[in-house]
Length: 453
Image (cartoon, rainbow, N blue to C red; front, side, top):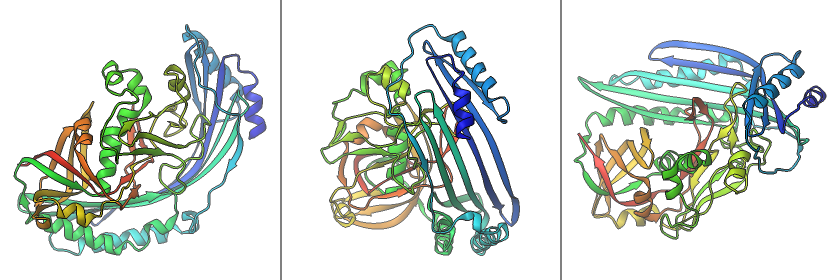
């Protein structure tokens, strides 16, 4: 493979060219209610050539290797056709490496029958409650190998094993419908999906309990968010604003996202780290062959960095961070997050709670949306806090606000960091789902606008 790819690149008559070739096998199982909706294994093979000439990119995807040199020529022709300016790519080292993966239990060693049986067991556990109307259990695993080479002399092979499962319970009482959800998924192997019986019980009970929860009264509250909701907030509300292609193309964001500007208290630090082995967003190298790294987006309250590809780093006169990623060979890499989280500090959850007279404890996220710096998230589960104690369960808790104001309103950061992957993944520019992780500790935020029914 290496000789074939390198020989094909010799014909590239452009400023820069690269080839990615991807091969893999995946398994998917899905239960919806009592029905086994889908089960099967799938193999995939393909690749792409990307070429740069005078600032213009050419891109060709393919499913065979017989005409690889011709595909290189086609990408180069495209680039020469559109290129009119100066090519800009930040320098990166020439790398030759083979990244092998190792897990305790390889999903490839588990039969499809065994995988289906474990999904069936979890599904039956959720459906065992009379108040559960329906369920959704979804299992995914994949084993892939990615080959990368460029005209700078790099040749990298990376192996990846992903495995995960999601559990959803939906309860109903008349017109009142509530749901609870749990998902795990990362690069730690089949052990991820084992021993999830307790989580089946938890999501079932949570969905049923929400039927009798009190709808929240809208208003401004001090809110404590759990590590999972903290991760969703960091990723969705702030992480996407830190992707350099978004900043470069948006004049308003360039005015706001000025390096050196204060964004929160001294204790606030937000990180993107693609080098965390085992997490869902881990890669030793990104899809441009750049080594991944720990990048402080905010450090001690100050905006410190942003996420870059080689091209955005060159255009903004900054350093590449190893964040050029594509979901598959049919897409060109764009700037994406990896494992994004808020760093922990020294507050215990108990101390954080004890200092709140009237507030809300919000757990998890069922969904949300962002529009520039504005965000809206629906908490999966929530409780009132009264006189420093967690009290009655509430529902329909929707957190709304401006991300920059919200960051400035953080006044306590916990010591209990958790990083979470899952099956959902991240979406951007038509590329979804991209495997990522996010997380943080418990965090307390003042003056959060809570919308209720």
